[in-house]
Amino acid sequence: MNINSGIRLQVIGQTVTLAIEDGREWGQRFLDDSSWRGDKKKMAKHAARESTFASRRKSINRRLSATGGMSSEVAMSLYSQVKLASTLFTIYEIDTIRVSSQSLVLAAVAGVSITELANQLEINPTQQNIQKALASVPNKKIAELNKNLGIKLMSQVSDTKINICGHSVKTFIQAYRNPMLLG
Image (tube, rainbow, N blue to C red; front, top):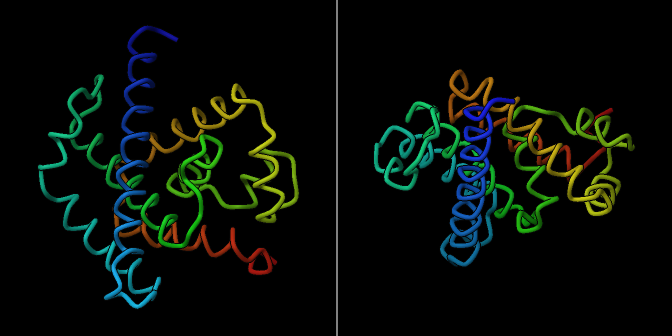
């Protein structure tokens, strides 16, 4: 790996971390707002719609100071998609704080199915198995998994629209929470 690739991966990692944190905060605001009356589907639909509009605005660029060789459009798209995924995970009360849980967000955004993720972890695709596997995997292996997911995500991020991302993440969350949908 050359120095530019290393810098780019570092910037991608920082962008993903920032987007996950911002998404978690936004999702928590939805959950704390009693006007939603706990309707997670409406919250998720609104978050996806708002993300579509926000991804068209240039204000996100100020949050992404260094793009490490990525175009600002790609960095903005990456940030928007990961933030939306993190928001949806938070709305559906799936942890995004632990480093191991961040693999779920990246997998969902990258279009990796629950079955594919379980295959990479060499386990059966149930929420409990995936949680256990991610919790027990050494940080080095989690970092490698996240790197691979990040690379997959970057290879498609410029081609993926935010609206498609929202639907994909909701499908991932449904399969994660209900493995009976897999068969």
